[in-house]
Length: 442
Image (cartoon, rainbow, N blue to C red; front, side, top):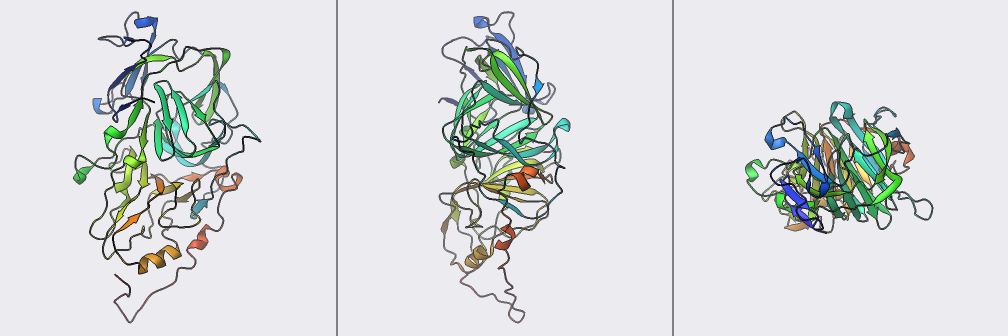
C-alpha cells in the first residue's frame, strides 16, 4: 500500500499506468487526458471560507451518474429512529458483540451494520450515530456511500482492505480511517471481523486546536495517510450494486461498471487513515488530572465554540507520575454523552467486565467512575512512576447531544450486561468524622 502524508492537505495523485492523467492548469478541460470524465466531489458549500472549503476533482472512466434509479431496500439493523424504545438513563455496558459465523451465514460489512445509539437529524445536518459492524465475508460487486455524514471506522478484530474512489487503504485494529460524506467504498475482510463506527451529520472531523500546548502534539498532521490513485476498468453488466444511505434509509442502484474507475484526482476532500500508536500523549506531571480532552484525536465541531457534535478520544499507553493523586479516572457526572469501546487489553478503571469488542454508554449527567475494586487498590497504591495502559487501547466517542439507544442495542443484540451496576455496589463509606487526615501511603 502507498499513501500520501498529511491531514487536510491539497493533494494530487494519478495511477502510474496513465501518466499525465491530471489536466494541466485547469479542472475541467473540453477533453480530458485519456478521454476521461471530470467530476467534482464537494464536501462543503462552494462559498465556505477557504480554510474550511473541501472538494476534490476526480478524473474517471465513466461519471458516477451512470447508474439505474435508486430503489429502497431492507434496512437491516440500520436506523435513525431514536424513539423506538423509551429513554434509559442508566449506566449501560455491553458484552462483546457477537460476530456471525461464516459457516452459518455469510455477512458482509454492509449487511453487518447495526445502529447502537444516536441523536439529532441528518436532514438538518446536525447529529451523530454510533454503529457496530459484525461481518465475516467481503463485499462482492457492491459498494456503499453515505449521503448523511462521515464515517469514522475503528476496527477491533480483523483488518479491512478498503477500496475507495481515491485508492486503497489497509486498516488494522489500533488504526482508524475516515470515509467522508459521499465517498463510495467497498470492504474486503479476511476473517470474522468486528469494529465500531462514529457517524457525524453535516460536519467533518478536524484536528483539535492546541492552544497553550503549542504547535506540536496530540495527533500530528503528518501521521494521517491518504490513498494514492488506483483504478479498475471492469465491466459488470447489470451486476454492480451501489448502496446509498440517504436520510437514514438505505437505497440501491445497479450499474454496469465498477465505481472504482478514477484514474487521477486532486483536492483536499479525501478518505484517510491514522495509526493510534502515533498519538503524542500530553499528561499531568505534577498532581491531579488534566481533563480527558487532552486525549482528543479528532473533533467534529458544533456551532457553539468549544462544544463538539462528537469527539474521538483515546486512552493510550503512557506514564502516570502525578503525586498526591487518585490516578484512575475520577467519579464524574457530565453534560456530555460518553460511549466507550475497547480495542485490546483492559481499561484502567475497570479491570473486569469491560471487554474488547464490547462497549459502555454513560449518558448525560449519569454518574460513573471506577469500580469498587479499582478504587480500593488505587487509594492504597504507592505513588511511584508507573506505566499505564500498556498493551491496551480504549477509546471514547463523546458528544454534546443526549443519545438514545436503539432497540437492537437494548434488546435484540442480547449483549447488554444487566449486572453492570453491581460493580459499584461494594463501594463503602470511608468517612472519618473525627479525623481529618486520611490514611494511606501517599
